[in-house]
Amino acid sequence: MPHLVDPTLTRRERQRESTYVDIVEASRALLAESPELSLRAVAAKMGMTAPALYRYVANYQELVDLVAFEIDKAATLTFAAAADALEPDDAPGRLVAATTEFRQWALGNPHEFAIVFANPVAEAACVRRDLLTVASSGLLMTDLIHDVWRQRGFAIPAIDDLPDVVRASLEDPLIPAKVEDLAREDRGLVWVYMQGWTQLYGVVVLEVMGHMDPRVIESGEMFIDVIRRFAPTIGLAEEMPRLEAIIRERLGRASG
Image 1: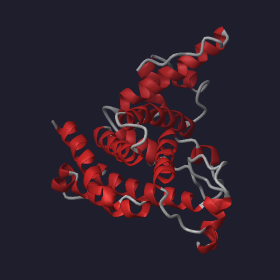
Image 2 (image 1 turned 90 degrees about the vertical axis):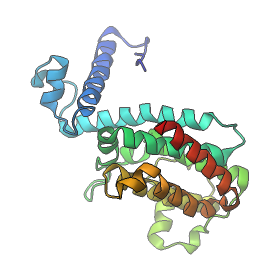
Image 3 (image 1 turned 135 degrees about the vertical axis):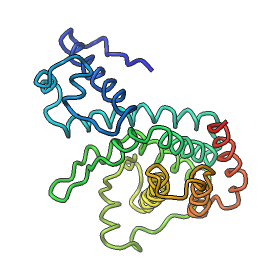
């Protein structure tokens, strides 16, 4: 998809923005061939010198942050498109369609997946709050779970019944989710967000890294099992046969 540079920017700003687009494109081209990414390799791919590239990204971590953010943003468009193939009032179907598309994208783009989701953003000495809270894919997934809660009204844990550290994390959450409009008594929903993402990410990263029987990866059965076991948490146990059919149809489409 072509990147459109904001026409309201000045000429200098447009040139700088265009260079950032080129940096991301060069980085993605390199990642399609190898998991290794370096400032020198990106500069060479762009026909620049490494010192010239430093005018745009100050160090390797800044390069990774830029590329990871833009890859995640672009990939999320495909996850959202999968959800949008279903009706707006089918929040459960939209959720499983998007999560299945996430899994398929990760398997098809393992190097891009790794740079987005194996890029440390929570460090012991300094939490990089902006990168913990703005991920496009995270915002989409939490929005989709919120839609299920709004449409189906599943039970959520009472915030005061949760461990102290969890309660503190729900009152000031560091996850990509729209929490401003959630009343304190509804913040247990954020814990459900965290549980869902942990289970989805856990199975997908094991599949992408090949730490699982390849026959099981190819079949998608472990992924389906994780969704099946999480479904009761969001009130979807009875709908699971229909949702599993949606998942299997999408898996079949990808392998066909």
